Image (cartoon, rainbow, N blue to C red; front, top):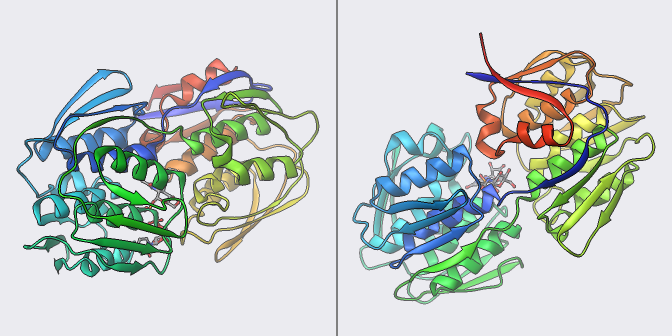
Length: 421
Ligand code: UD1
């Protein structure tokens, strides 16, 4: 087991290139199960979660080959399995995204419940509601979900009670080869939804309206192959923007689509940061004065992303004055609060709200990455502590950041990874 050790290193300066988006790569790799000709994906980030979903595909019979560090060739033309194993499904919730493609390609699928969790605790009810509407028969027990549509799926209109990213993607993929038209009302509008729709269309699907309040999918008989480049990771970009803000630095972030991160830019400006949007997909974040507190409310896109909430809370812990965070997308997404508190942050939570009173200085501590973005937030907080901050359980961080230590080090951070004793 490894840990990250980090301490105050002065303002971070320089430039950093953002990788392809994890949350685009995962559904697009799952959707590659639909292709009957080879698919080449570029800008695939080198992450634990990506390795898991690629293994799921291999287990199903797809051929996966890395052409270079970030280019993957996937050939699903000869897959013959429609059952995904418990072992891999239980490692990552996003593995459940193979269900839609398998169901529409084979007319049946059998998978475990994602992440080993029971329906109800972290629900997949909207995914299942969608499959059912498309006339799949579902058989769900404590661990396994079987879905069958012997005569194929049938297009319908589906209203999502909440614009779930995963449910929108799973239904969209299932609908690509359903009979007739599927309409998803109140879908998620995230850039990753648009990237998936663009990819599906390149394979020969007919998906319209991704990124708006209604997505229409006309079923086609067969999907082919393509070359597709994954969009940049807006959450990795956000994390480095906060790294600049929290160290009073001056960082230029390359490979960043600014229109994907408007709420983040707005909030950093409200706090007193200078954010310069350039036309060449780069963004410069620098700070020439002490920052002040602000209010954020997480929302489905285009609102403030829940995946940037923890990193902002680390920043709010060290700016002047009070801040408030309202988390409306996930329940219990405040696990980083206890860890930040160990570093001297003053944070009070009440249900889905947290109030933060900025302190002049955090102190080094031994803290635990409780999830991916919480881990990133602790590393960011550690960039401000005079003493060393040790972050353990960093496998969470490796799920979603490729070489965060190397990238921060190149910007001047005093940070290293080492084996735990
Ligand atoms: C995706 C992202 C994750 C991000 C989240 C919200 C990937 C791989 N992960 O996760 O990083 O934090 O979007 O932006 O893209 N819900 C239901 N029923 C369902 C499905 C979801 O009630 O069937 C609820 C969830 O419990 C949660 C909310 O909807 O409270 C949002 O979940 P969802 O948008 O589905 O997130 P994911 O797709 O799992």
